[in-house]
Image 1 (spheres, rainbow, N blue to C red):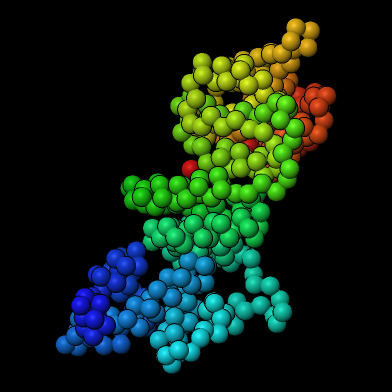
Image 2: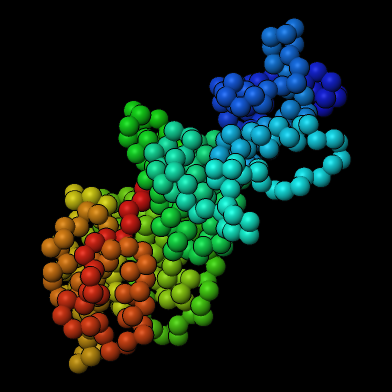
Length: 358
């Protein structure tokens, strides 16, 4: 009965907004900016959205989630309402404007300026813009699909560096500048990024099980885990063993984990100077394990923006500049079982940190 009433009488803007996961203000702004309003109004004033109107708005959401600019998405969505019943879509995306359309047979531009959603994204991949819009709408299915597709299309490292991390940073900056707004957006996006990283498939066969693992841990008081989760996923993708201990690992627990695991390397993440404990890092680097006469110590990677540049000056420590460099450095330890290179063990040019994330 309710479905029949909706088909005949339509639904209000508030009902449509709840179904789409956006605010009523957003629905009204789409009508004002792009002309995609209901075909009829109750008494000439109140909006009543018929099934074909709702389908048009659902198409608008789908297209913007995939990164299509809102104006182009609106034109394509409006065309779905004008199309005769039963006529199939001719494409899965909105037509590109002349300004952004690639030459015949050419690829779509990977990067486009601006975000159109109020988040400070800058010059980013189209997938990043779509992910940001889905996050602001709290659209979980769209975020899950976009993250999965980004990893499939670009690989885990590029997906992290050029899609996930920029979106996380933009949401974080928006939260910091809007007096605690967007907290729910940041939490939901972080959860979906974490889930996508854990689900990322391995693309290389695993190393022999007897080889020592990489220990990943946030320093005491450090709650930011996503960059380490990206590193854990990258190690799994390359078939390298890892033990992920997560956020704010207590000092005693970290020391016990190193002694018990006998790792080839320990990655210590610090997001801020307040959690960068150089003395603890040196203690971990000096932890020896193994049989008498053949004892060894792990290589320590100081990851994250909290570490000062000079913190990696001690022997046996590295300070990788990003996820890709950290993975290459750790992979080198398994390709060269004799141990890390001479000197401080840092790869050439390693002067910065694994990319930050919230």
